[in-house]
Length: 188
Image (cartoon, rainbow, N blue to C red; front, side):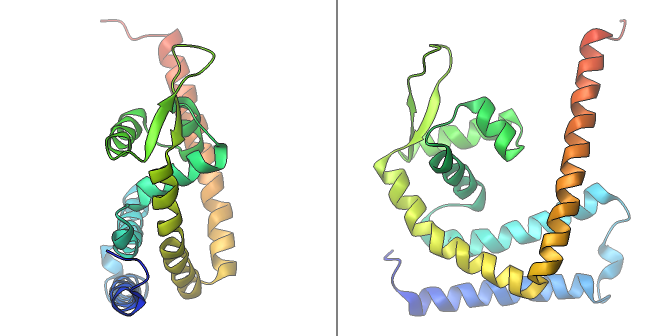
């Protein structure tokens, strides 16, 4: 599909944004407020699924999903990245990341390069990957702009600050728990 077909693309994007806006509006105005869980994890997952669907809908013409876009954008920003760097930067579990990287590699948008430590394989974009990312960026920007207009840039800055703190706390607690389990394994 040619990405400059803005008439059809614009209509599809507008439709998905309106649909997402209605879903979020129902959740936040009280009409479906009872659906939100008092559980932080459940609520964050619900919101994440809805926002991910929005971005995926908008990115569909590029052939990328938002998770793939994030991985490609991170690799592009870093120049090349190994699995550990991507895990740390994206805060994504190894299984999900490995699966996504294998798909991106099969699609020919990333390739594994050599690393001074032969055991480590660095990922880098191929020319196809750079083209895919370039095609997806304006679509991503459109979704990002719409969400920020609906939410408000100040509200997003505040939410981002709070979520960054929550991420730090969760990652730190998880690492501490893993370290304790390694030092004091449970007896059988």
